[in-house]
Length: 542
Ligand code: GLN
Image (cartoon, rainbow, N blue to C red):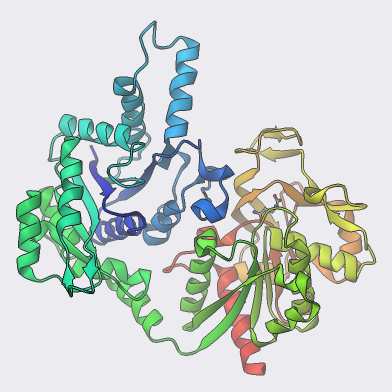
């Protein structure tokens, strides 16, 4: 039977609950335990796939093709445990399952209610689909006190009752704000937040208090007293310089010690050497390199969460600090000369994206990178734009476009209506719903021997995660290859171009999938390692 840790948040949102959960899981792994992390999201969307990235941040895609909350990305990056479809659920998903059951008549005439039907569905989600891990960590999205979270809190309260304290632990993350005018840290919001939790029948076992300043001992004692929590279980979460310091920082404050103590497990010493190494490398880089990300959702960096992290990992692999310049591609459309601003960067990356707005600016950025011999890395939409750039400017296909933007003269990037997953053919049409109907999840890709991609991966067959609706049309392979663009990665049946590259350029690689989703600080993705290395090389030339 696994032990369950439920993580809730209070006072304000954006407290870093997801990071806290991920860091705690990493600390439990460092003590030799196996873990699985889950996220329960109270919003009504069935999944975040249809939400704008500027609303909810990046959509993280799992190997098995689920579109999930970005916190699952933190979970994977901190633990290396690959998330599954069954690790993220929303109110929308729970309700649509309950209502489908009701329509089928599965409830045998009962009146369907939040308690017990919705709460039972949540409990079933929490308690099933694991592989006998030692710990299941379940984060509840939102803030305690939100109307939407109530059924989730009720469900975890019931689980706590049914399994008992030996098998469940409630961890509450709060904020201790600093009031500059008074020069004081304030504990009252935390007290209120715990009261709110107690009012729905949950007594937190451990508090993780976010604070910018050290908390005097008497204040910590006061929190313990007012919140009915052992003083040592009031753990401070001081702000740190970079997120990979979080596991070490929480360990130093006693978080994992309190968790194993709660469960009556032996007080062993965790092996934190991997985290110490990562932090040392990040803190003492041997150089710096600037990379431009030319995208559309640059106003909210959470939209490209995994991408930013994967570049940090590429920096760790090369012992350098990567400085990211976020550039809105529309700037290059307003003013021709604007693209010259890219002269001082050592690498240009066009990430994933949707829709026509900003696409011409991205194509301009690709052209600049190609002509100026600046390392170029295209991801998903960034590959489609790279292919259009070569087609239009080198292959004479001036009418080349993507059917995502209407009906181009030459549909070089087009809607793929059929593809194979395992033994099954999946079909799509332009009239399908938008939710959950893209090519999603891990697919096999075969690399052409001797290609740059082949050398970078050191493998002939790879599996990478996808999230897109359109594909580069293989019918134009010859036209592209005669213009110097090699298709170096293909789907097993040879129909879907997965990677393109240019031999006449120092480092020009564009991929149809999202490699950033699989990069980890302790296992940087080879494409990011290679791109940052090429950018370092470039910075020596300038
Ligand atoms: N909009 C493009 C497509 O759907 C690319 C998607 C992406 O970059 N994730 O194919």
